[in-house]
Every structure is written in C-alpha cells, then in structure tokens.
Image (tube, rainbow, N blue to C red; front, side, top):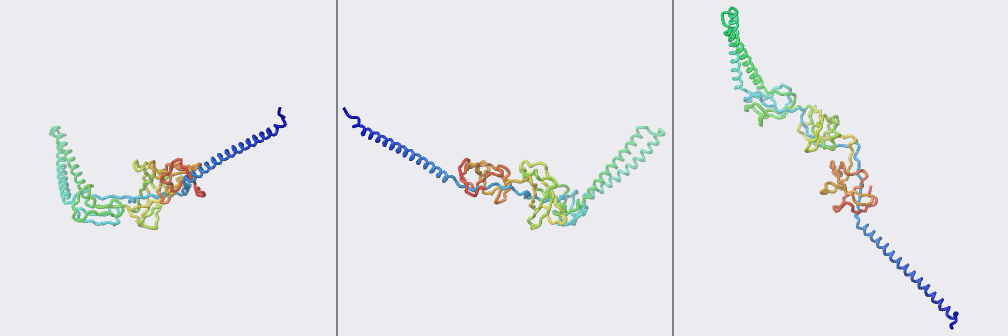
Length: 388
C-alpha cells in the first residue's frame, strides 16, 4: 500500500501546471480580443478617413439682404405729351407750305394751303342753287299769301289754297337744303387752310408744292406730324413682382445716353392697374417737364425707380446658380453637411450678383461654384472659416 505523503508533491505540481495553463489561455484570449478590437477600430478609422477624403470640399456663402433704398432700373419709351398726324380734309393740289420740320407752331397757325378748283366750282353751283331756291320760295310765299286772301272771300276752293300753302312750305324746305349744302361746302373750303391743332413742333413734313392731296386718312397721305413736347410721357413695363410697389406719385430718375451726366426727375402719374397677360408686366406712365426741350420724343430712357423698403430682396453671387432641367437651383448645405438642392426664382441680374425673389432663406448656406455632379444628399466638407 502506497504512502499518501509519497504522492502529494506530484499532485501539487499538476495543480500548478493547470493554473499556468489557464493563465496562458486567459492571456491568449485577451490578446485575441484586443487584436480584433484594434483591427475594428483601425478599419473604422480608415473608413472615416476615406469618407473624409471622398467628400467634396465646398465654400459656402449666405444670401445678402438688399439695401433699404432698393433701386429698380428699367428701360422706358419717351413720347410727346400730345402727338398728332395731320391729314387733309379736302381734295386738291398743294399751293404752298409754310412750316418745315423743327418749326415751333401755335394753335391755329397756317401750315399749308390747298388749291381746290373742283370744290370752288361746287360751292359756286351750290350758291347759285341756293339763290334759285330762295327766289322760288319768295314767289311761292307771295302766291300762298294771295290765295289765302282769296280763300277768305271764298273765291277759290280750299283744295287749291292748300296746294299753294304746301308748295310754299316745300320751297322753304328746298331753301334750307340748299343752304345746308352751301354751309357744308364752305366748311370743306375752310379745310384748304391746313392749321396746327395745338401748340407744338412740326416733326414730319410729307408733302410739297404741287402734290396731289386726297382727303382722308390712309397710308402715305399724312401731310404733317405735330408734337407737343413741352411735357413728355414715359412708358415703362414693370415686372409683376414689383407691380404692387409702383404706385402714382412714385418718383424716378431718368437718364439718357445722349445726355451724359444729366438726371431728370419724373413722377409716376398712372398705371394700367392690370398686368399684360403675355409679358406679365404692368404698364406705368411717368411725366417729365420738358420746357427746355432738351429731351426728344422717341428717345430711350433708363428709368431708376426708388422702391419702398418693404420691397427688399435677397442677393447671391452669380456663380452659385446651377442650371438644371428642373429650372434654376442652388446647392445649400444642411447641418449634417449634406447637400440640399433648392429651386429659386431669379429677379434682376447685376452681373456678379443676382436677385433671388423666392426659394431661399437669409440663413441658408449656399455653395459657391457647385460641381455639375452635385446631387441631393451628397456629403460635403465645408472649408474651415469659409462658411458664413
């Protein structure tokens, strides 16, 4: 039989071996776990670094609010306050003309004289017819008076007396008709004198001595053109978005290429109070005092409106706009640094900047020079210190 004390050292050795083996196993497992965690962390760091490298770096700006005194510049068409073509009212030949282009004329001033031989003969015939009618009327009136006296003594029948009275009335009507015809021809005779209808300046002369004159308004029959230029009308087509701010009384500065350095103050007199259904614009009329006659009708005017403060709009650099099939867009960056495309409505183009009427907010971060490949949700990296 074995002694227990003789086998106790071997048992202690086994326990120590098992303890060391367990410790080595724990160390191996710990090293394995640590290695796997390190690889995962390294992989995630590498993915983040790759994502950061792939994300496009962009520079952003914020829309700028326009000034309080917003200026709207539009083209304007200048017209005379009153402008009228002069046509003949009678037929004939031009005997003389007395005013040429550029002449200042007064109302009623003689512009030209027309020879009307046919009308003169017609008037002479009408006057002779009137004299005949008056003679016949006088005879009929005397005969009627006598027959009425005979009727009183019953020397003639009532029927015969009524015939004479009717004949006298008819002769009187004939006189009135002939007199009206004479008056009509005399009115036509008065149109031999072509006169100015109002104070103004002759801008066109389309006739000369000996020219055949035909009465009426038709192509090529205009004799003169007279314009009242002491005051001018300026017509402007205002875009729909500014129509509500353009009211009578609104002042504007007028500038002309042919008058460099000069500005003229005009007042808005009236508006059409309706938009053109095709152009979507409001026709506005301004008036300008032109007593010195420095501005000519037909000129091109640059009209500068000073819009009220409530007409403020946003502006962006022109290189923020993206042209797509969906229309004009800008690329904005959201708080998660992802692209959000927004459709905008553009107003005026100022060259380096554009006016944005709707589609963005003052606090939006808008990308400068967005790439053509920019899409919704695209991750980007905003350049440090550039986002404002």
